[in-house]
Length: 217
Image (cartoon, rainbow, N blue to C red; front, top):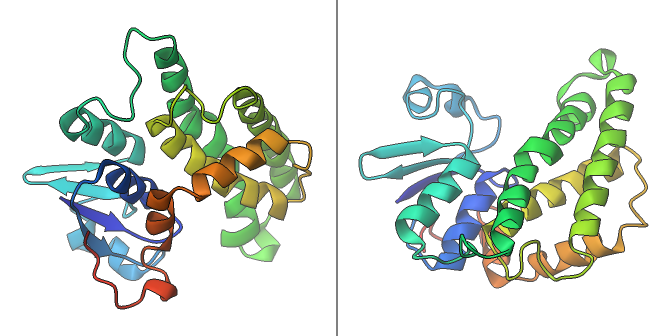
């Protein structure tokens, strides 16, 4: 399987998933914002010119959550998903979709307003509103891991989806001036995820310290 990948993007989720499952993959490296991502060739693969994209034989699929669900359904053999009859399964679904449904929208607003737009086009009202919303979303995650190491019992794909989102969110919120010092459970949760060998490998992929390392495992 081939993963179209750029560092520090949602594509990290996909490499992290493959590493956790021990699945082989090939990487096609892209640089975020590079004109090649808007080329006709790549737009024919991903119509928005973004990452990740997964190619599995004749199947092409984009959107990180859909890729995670596809890979787990086809190759997971029940791993990283609670049993559908368990008490943890509804929690798994809740937090899996919380990542893109609740966490990432305000993150996107903050990134656009503080990084992508030129200073004269930025709107501080948008930043302040998004930061307030994001702080509430992160507080919900902080409460969600208060009584356990992970979101739905054992480590699961919900932790991959939401964990990566929380890492991006805490970075964006701090940049926007939010005070997250009272969310100790969240901080400990993120530390646990960052210390997983599979995450470390995924997070380092394509970065300078791994220059020259083949994009395959």
